[in-house]
Image 1 (cartoon, rainbow, N blue to C red):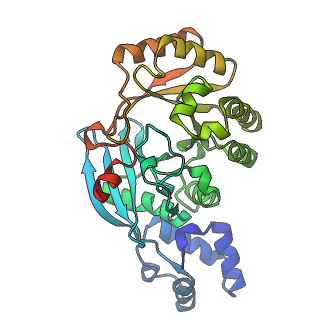
Image 2: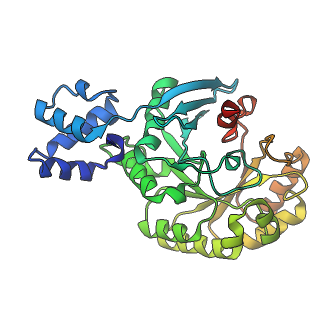
Image 3: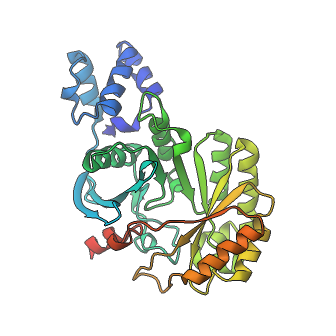
Length: 340
């Protein structure tokens, strides 16, 4: 049965009309779901018995079972959730000076196979439904006890490999009738599936896009990310330019700093040449070491020099503040540990 969280407001209005109910019933249902955050249809006390029966017959309120909650000294909390089919997923809530953000998962496992990532060790079993993605936000907000104001789709899985469910989720998150989170407070991250970047650009959303690049050339990127053999850096850069032309939005370039592999001054110079004149900024990310991969985190002096080199070459860049390191906040770690 389909999760009610996986239905857009427009689709629910049509559903009501098709079943001889007033379309304003959709507004009532969305108010109960996203403003009052009820846990059962029975709590929707202003709905008629016929509407309640219609909802219960056709939809379910997706429930996630919280299995483990890990708290960091910096305020980051990681949740391990169980799905109805006994699969496991993770979500991470982070504290910032501007509010609270959540990193949500889009798939059970991942087929992208990035060499540095704990998530890719466990192959994709299935896509998450739009309702299962949304339920991570709803349940984590309840467990965390604070309103979540920012969302990043950067957890386990490749969001653009689950495109249809991703788009339904984004619509309900952004909808004033839904969670009402502003488009510019939402970020989707992809490892570089070029046709989907093009499709996403044509949606002309104001939702942020981040590209996991992690290398300044094809040799290094192919060694780290198998997807580069199908969609090499040149194609990714073309897609980035197309996206910017279509949306007039800046793109975030994610770049994990791995010791002696992609973090030297010559790599920064090469990256600057690659991105020169493109409306991007580079988010330099200290690598979270995982037992599933042989790589080491860059030395602080190398990260600082890399950052300063980019700045000197007129590339906007930030060095990400580390959060949740003491609870193994790298994607997939808690899940893989639990399965072990």
